Length: 594
Image 1 (cartoon, helix red, strand yellow):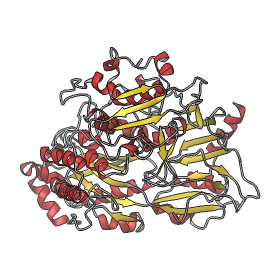
Image 2 (cartoon, rainbow, N blue to C red):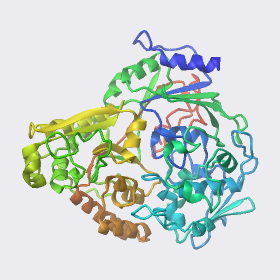
Image 3 (tube, rainbow, N blue to C red):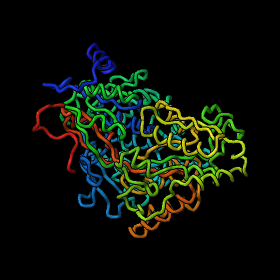
Image 4 (cartoon, rainbow, N blue to C red):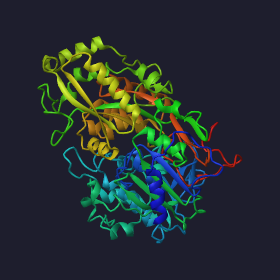
């Protein structure tokens, strides 16, 4: 503990000089220190739906298979010994049944053996948890054939027995039988089958795995689960401590790991919102990797001993507009009425309000100035390079004159006469989002002095919680592909049961029908046409301000080796292959030239 305390104190101490140092040897050679901008929301793999939490979980828990390096189409075995395919007989010829031979000799961090039953339990637990706005639909849809365990009134509708019968153990082979073929399924398995210990879960008060008790664990409160701040996985690192006060997670090497133990003995991940502090820690060698917003890239480029690189990512940025804001205990909407001192719950349900906000967004400035040209303008929610992206889709451009006309019509003219006040929140430390929020604020407030938007930074965990609670009027947020298929974006943003659409109360029955049709369409050209139609409707409804697809800037010390950037999220690192060395012949850190 003395060593841990000294390491934590070290990263808390500011460097006394802004001059970068070039070191003759690696500092803290067996400890990787990652300084990001945020804290995490939860350690529960069935609850988390944010990249901050996933960064920690990916080190603690493992899936049945994983992505191979930075590929989006190739997989490698993890807790299963083989990647199923028709060729090896582990995928049925009708494309419905997948068999995963479970690896033997794997131990959880508490020393107990992992079995096929743990894998089955973990998949069922992920589905039955189904917290509001959470990730459960990712497995519910292909396995159970539904997007939710509940109806619109919150009543449980899942046929648990039928769903459970589709996930079975035959000896130490896990068999998953889908109701119909589902093309992206292996990509989902690679990201969303993190295995937990059923014995540990039940002993700590979580679901015991039986049909009789599952409903009690449906749509849980975040802090109610032992997995919120406790962890017991099979991954290369185990949780040693989560210090919420300092936003610090300390992970230690799992020496009984089924592969060779990691070369790093510890990983320390800490949230520091101020760029200047992160930069000083990097320059002094007291951080190995720091998160850097695009506008600060020039300040770290050319720094001795520091590597800066850019990586493509399979994610998009948007500003989400909430059609039905929850008003109870809501600090973001002022009076909660259309009286000049707040906004009502249905503020963005008015199409003229939405159109006005959309026309006050300057995509060109966002791309060229805020992101320094390292982004592509988004033409909907489907990123460039994905099936269904329409490069010719017209997009709204900055038009303050037309925006004013819409605002004058909103709420029968009352909005223009009375004005409004609201809080536009962003996650603290995200300087790019702060700049974007200020751009929107300036353009809207220039139209009418009665329009007042206050920009406010928030802790990431608070931001995520209040977004899930549907309290935020509008949010700048990104969506990282859960799996590399356009359905993941279309469902999330446009289907009424998708994570963002449900939180924002966006519902268009025609869109719901098109999203489902596109998923199961087998002809690529017809499928593309459906996504083109969805994108067109998406712009017409103005449920979102569609932003950009940006490249990620990656910044680390030159002694960092073994880093692999995957487009699903270059910042959600996998620390197992990483190590620290000044040997120039060692493997490169960034996977440049991919």
